[in-house]
Length: 488
Image 1 (cartoon, rainbow, N blue to C red):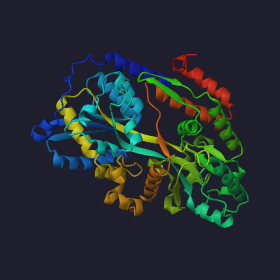
Image 2 (cartoon, rainbow, N blue to C red; image 1 turned 180 degrees about the vertical axis):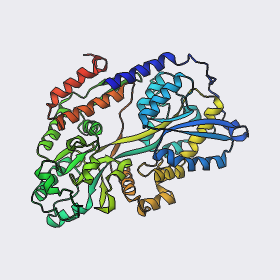
Image 3 (cartoon, rainbow, N blue to C red; image 1 turned 135 degrees about the vertical axis):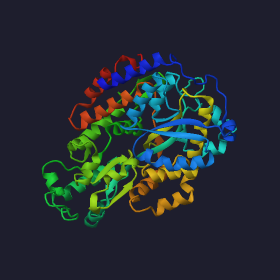
């Protein structure tokens, strides 16, 4: 929590300092996209992203953009340290009037920028001469597009950011082991519901304890077999990678409540409910029965490490992180399926929506904003969001028609060597869109990231440390404080 309060101080400092500098940004919106398109005058913009697969995938796409708009010079600003550092660096740059033109970020980041009046509304560009018509807007995955809304309570449908790199959660499983187990017991299948997972996990534990699976996969000298992990108490059939996501998905699947947004600057916590208490008690019991774990159960930061070591045969993780679950030297084969949901024939087949959006910041001129919009629209064309998804591996296209492009259609059925796992995850994500699953993301407000951290801590305390669920929920309410609690 100390880190959380430091972040709040930074945000409040941003609110206090914004507007105090001498930047040359335009305070009145004028759509200059036509002027920029037709001019040879150079326009310089800066696009801030985290370093890594995203920054590596963009230069080729920007080069294609410059074939169309050579006058727009794009500085790709790759920040080391992930999205937290992107946000922190951007806040500091806003205070010193050095903000980038475009920035990637999560909705709660943009909630802070909106409160400080340092993010521009994209609605005028969307409805302008170089914007999107109704059919094009409908081509975006609806839940992705909705993330950029609900900042301005008077105009909740106005869009302040557009989806850029999206991912979701999937179930990654050890196909080699499952194939072997099914030969022994045909009832061992990849589970679809939590109750099926319970039944299958019990059967897996029996086979592992008896040593029936020790010779299925060749292990290196000095490595332990599954039965040895079971004997020492470190084998669990299933592991959830993110405790934050595990808790939040549980609240959706059980209709237990999580947060309620009041405004961009305020939200309440509502997760102290009988439904969520029942969910925590369920997973606590599953852990005590050695059927359910999280990464911290294995004293690891990521469940993928336990998965590769054969301490677990199933893990729920990000589609963007599939590569971390692939063992070296093809020690075993993986496959990908849907995350478990609560019960068969349920309407609550919720799966969390992840990844970031892109926004244009206010410390820019109307020419820079127009150039930024032209870049943004170019990169979000179906063929380019598809190219970006394939180049980054586990990220997903943000346009529905992108899945139908020739190149991406081939990627789904015949991926390049090394991209097989990412292709599997993309197929599962496409199945979510067609199979009755619901992508969700909870409305962001200033401070909502702190709530997310706290519920992750609840799940860890209950599953790993055996804490009483009700007591741990009540402690979380005390930690977050009265400002987050609805008046009685």
